[in-house]
Amino acid sequence: MNPSLNPLVTSVKESATLAINLKARALRAQGRDIAHFGFGQAAFPVPELLQNAVREHADSNMYLPTQGMIELREAVSRYYREEFSLDYSTEQICVGPGSKELIFQTLYLVEGALLVPAPSWVSYGPQATLRGKEVVPIATSRENSYKLTPDELDRACYSLGQQQKMLILNNPNNPTGAVYTQNEVDALSEICRAYQVIVISDEIYAGIDFTGKTHASIAKSYPEGTIVSGGLSKLFACGGYRLGVMMFPQSLNSLLRAIKAIISETFSCVSAPIQFAGLAAYNEYDKLKPFVERTNDIYKFASLYLWERFIDMGLNCPKPMGAFYLFPDFDNFKFKLRKHGLFTGLSLSKKILDEADVAILPGSDFYFMATHLGARVASVDFDGARVYKAWPERSDNNSHVVDEFFPNLKKGCDQLEGFLGRL
Image (cartoon, rainbow, N blue to C red; front, top):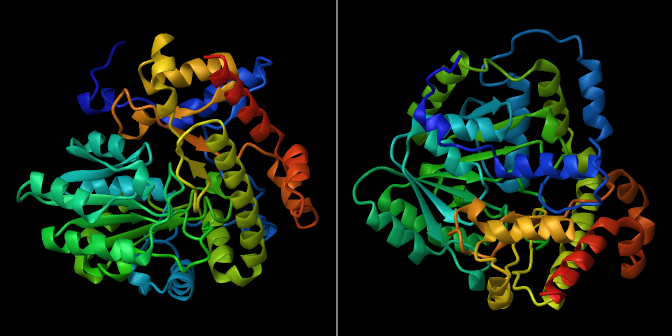
């Protein structure tokens, strides 16, 4: 049987991040010693507080409200108010099976083109494509740490004329590790307000920040047009739990009503035991702060180690300031690479995997041109449980920390440096 499929679906490929994860794992299963820089998943075990909540409510089999149970939404409201100075009532909050699904639902419902800074997370564009929306990448510059500027946004908005527009802004950023300041997002908010842009502020990495400054959200300066998304997956190391949250301003109540309707006709609600885990995370965040602070310290160490190694081997790479990603490029090796027939980021990443046993993702997966030689690197290929347990006693000696707790990061850098040296 050969069913006829929606052409919008057939134009979308498997998520690049999920695909590289499967490939790297398959190569490891075959005996290849792969340094896995391609997949960004929180490296640490789920905190016991959340595990216990799932165990205690494993018998909870009720259908919960489509928006999420009221106690969870109250806890989310309090958490965002106290931690990020964002004020949302329980009626302005929706709970879903991961922020990824909630973003898709929002893109599905809202008309107009989608503006995506390049580089950005791989799934934004394909989600919009599934809806038939125009996707407009906005190229950003390495010199500005790949952060979107008001001028870049202004030109893109102007080019689209009078149609309704949406912008996705990810802060801290996947794939670059960049972190916007409040002044930077305030400036962007002026452009968004001028063009009446609807913004999805993807703040899933909020809290994984190496700057020591208060988290900046465009929702503070552009509340009337900003939807904020977050969830458990990154800060609380719960990617597989699939619990996301999304917060809507009152000015977008029509969209919120539509979201509730589409939830009722699709996934109905997040599973009850997982919602209780979310309740524990947001309601008892004070108990989790030591976990967050220690894991942040480890993410920072690992990211800065990779950054220093990349700079030393001649790559260009903005300094990562949050999340657990870096975005180096191989422009300094462009002519040597061309002599080996390597003209695209995809061919380069395949060559690096084949010859150096290092898995990375090319810049073309993040809305750059095929010939862009940037690559997304994740800094989480280490034994999180072991590192977490020993970290306080080990963090004072960098060389010992790297050798003992980050062998795959060191090996990957050594092999990548060797590959470049052989060009």
